[in-house]
Structure formats: C-alpha cells, structure tokens
Length: 409
Image 1 (tube, helix red, strand yellow):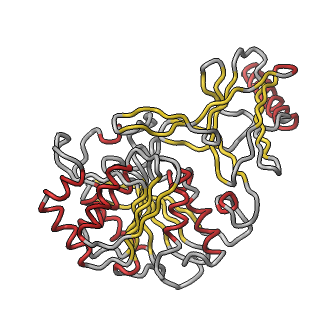
Image 2 (cartoon, one colour):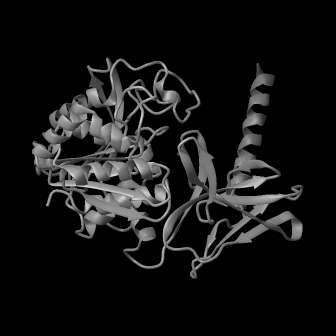
Image 3 (cartoon, helix red, strand yellow):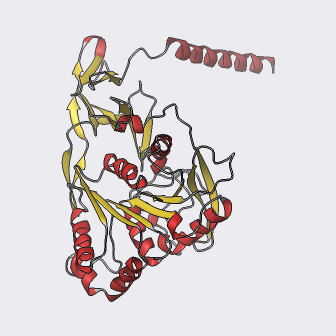
C-alpha cells in the first residue's frame, strides 16, 4: 500500500513539474502578430516540415464549385522557413475585421499552437484574430470593449410540438437583471450545420449588441438564438445523443416530428412567459442567415401577424415540395397559389421592415433576385442591401449590425 502511495505521489509530482514548466516557460512564439499598419505576421515552429501554408479568410478567396454554383473558399499562402525551423508569413495590410485561419503542414491542417482564440464552424475549428484601426470600426465593434455588458445564457425550454426539451442561447442587455423595464425581442437564427452557439461564437452577436447599445445606435433588446435543427435538442455534445461529429446537413436524420416553422411558437411562448418582454408584433423581430434566413422567410409568412421586422441574410428561400419542381424560383412563386395567398397575408399585415441582404458572389444570389422580382411585381415594399463577397460570416456580421439599427424605432 505504501509503495502504491509512493508511486502515486511521484506521478503527481511529475505532472505538477511538467505543468509548472509549461506555465512559467510559456510559448515564446508570437502568432499572429497584428501590427499597427494592419499587417499580420504568422509564425509556426515546424523544424521537420517540408511545406507550411496558412489558409484563411484574410487572403483573397478561392472559388469552388458546388451543385448550386460557385462559392468562395478561404485563400492559401505559403510560409517561408527561417532559422531553427521557424516558418513565417506576413500579410498585406488588412481592413478592420474579425478573421479566421489555420495552418496546413505537409498537407495536414493544424491550429496555431500560439493562439488560444478559436471558433467551431460545424465540425471544423479555426483560429481567429481581430484587426482594429480606430474606435467604432468593424474590428472594434466585434471586440470586447470597456462598455456595459449584457449576459448570455444557455436556456432549456419545452417544445410540445417537437416533443422534446431543447436549448437556446439568450442575450439580455446590460441592466436587465436589476431592472423592471420590458424589452423588445429579436429572434436570431443560424445557418445549416450551425446550432444555438453559432451566433455568439462565429457571429460575435453579444459583442455587437453590447457595443451598439452602448453607442446609442441600437435600442436595448433581448436576442434569442434557438437551435434551428428540429430533431436536435442542443449543440453536439450538449445533449443525450452524445459526442457525435456534426455534419453540414446530418442534423436531419432521424426525421423530425415537425418543422422548425411549425414549432416556432413554442419558443415565443417560452420567452414571453419567462422574460420581461414587450408583446405584440411591433416588439418582435426575426432574422437569420442562409438556412436561418429561409426559416425567417417561412416563419414570417406562416405567422403573418407575429413580426413587424423581418431580415433575410443570404437567405435559402425554399418553397417546399419535391426537388424536381420545374422552372425558375420566380416561375414557381408565380404559379403557386398558396404561396401567393401567404405573401398577400404577410404584406397585408403591413410589417414595418422587410429587409433582404446578400453578397454579389453568393451562390444563393439568383434565388434571392427571383424573390425580389416577385416582390417588385406585387408592389410589396422591402429594403435591399447588396455587398461584396459571398456566403460568408464576414457579411452576416455586417448584416446583423445594420439590421439591428433599424429595429423598434
């Protein structure tokens, strides 16, 4: 017994010694190094590597083909090997923004061991960094600044429609817990492959809201970010299904008992019962990116008196039915009597803002253009924003920033 205790103590001392060494020696490599001129230097110690690259959205994008067309992929640049196996690359001056990247060593992807800041997008992790130039720019907006902070909670709610308990993320603005004031609500929806964590990690929603509210550019509001996969309780690893690997569209198996659109009133009922909110369509907004834009499109027309503000970000507009429907999206809209009736009811309820935004190179550009032509022909009012770039988080963060400044006026 004494011998076992001695061995255990020796093991603990060895682990403690290793931890102390890691703690106090530190990692001397600085990567990424963001410089005042906006250039960024990446460094990786890889003495046995033959080829080291960095790939990320700070580089000119590459084009890849998908069934829907072309979309942007992160660019790639080569690092140069210096003394003692240290590889380096310095970028061109970058505009203020949040950027993501990872290394590729002899064909294998690696995170930067010198950078503890990272995000998960579906099943992929990338490191992140922020470039700032001056207060109020995009990089500053996505940063944690010395302003009053709201709280972000992970909330479980019962969905009778989906027959399960589900988790969502809720942002409450600074001062909510100590006050009695009631707030309007924005329902913010993620894209395919995402979950209730996407908008707070990749989208920087809490930082955006904190900074915009503190600057007086946005009215204080509650932001509800649900899980848009109707057969999932929560993000991967956060519910009883276990630590499965998430996939882009794998969330749809097994088949859900109801759609996200059909179950959405469960979310609204929970929020209005458990939070101090202003009720009624004048105090509700909904928006989302890609699949979440499609959900916002469908939910708003399914419940035409629920929201006064609707935002479609790079929206995956889907009319339903089989995949072999003939003709363009515009032809399908014009020939579908149910769709026409739903749209007439939606705009008959006179929403205060119907807002559409998309990048010029987005693979969903054409279906959104067809949808705008339908709205134009019917005389339905909307606001439209077109940006550079494609189906990327850089655009969606901008859209959230612009859309929220138009709400609840």
